[in-house]
Length: 330
Image (cartoon, rainbow, N blue to C red; front, side, top):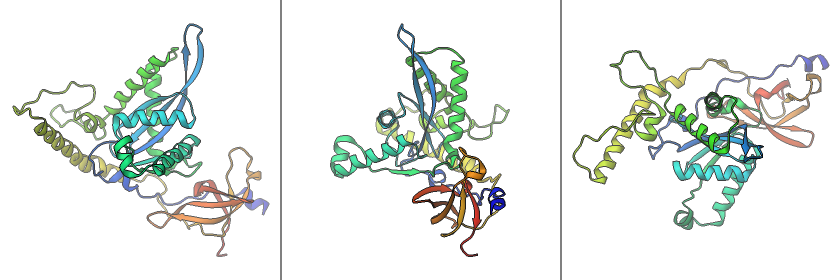
């Protein structure tokens, strides 16, 4: 058994299909209907003449459909700081229907506080006074960063853009906020589809098309129609948005079907399987032994998340953090 535990390898599973929040057009035809959120940092800023230094954090919101980003500065990693950043986001981008995040303590606490606020007020009072609707919050399993690739890659790109703007300069809160907004404009002007070298080809689709109706960092074109009635203008904007979503389905959506890893299926974990739980803080010979007590199959029937019991405590873990030792059917 000692040799078997030392030679155990982490389990794998066939790559899951994309969630519906990434491949379906939202009913409202606006960005950030399905949103993912994550934190990055810290960024050190100077305060006043005393040059005291404090930590600030980047709170990134990204649309899971259009890949548009919204960057907010958080003054801490607690739930209150995140809720303030969240309300600043919703006041400018609208209230999302679904939010996806990892299992950070600030996200779990924010979800609990929002649910308590919704439960204390009836729906009519919510719509009338606060405009808060019941939203669905999806938490990825702990220690499974590949579940959140949709926002992890945007965190990487945002940090690169911010460091390119700031370099090694000492900045204040105001300057850091300006850097965040500049990085946001840069990321939202990136092309989503192939950009050819020919100037006669159509302009590639960018997240700014869904946010502003035009390519980022470009002044708005003058209106060509003579009818300036607000209702007519609103209908024209809706037609332009539908045009962008039609291009999104034809040009961007097919590119998401590529699978570059995890192309073979493996045996599904079952209740009663004995596994080793990978722990990066300890050596391989000291990884704890656990038993699976529940499985959570995906839409395709493949098990990628399980509940594993270690001692008297039950943890939610991804199968990539487990090493199978003995199967219950054997």
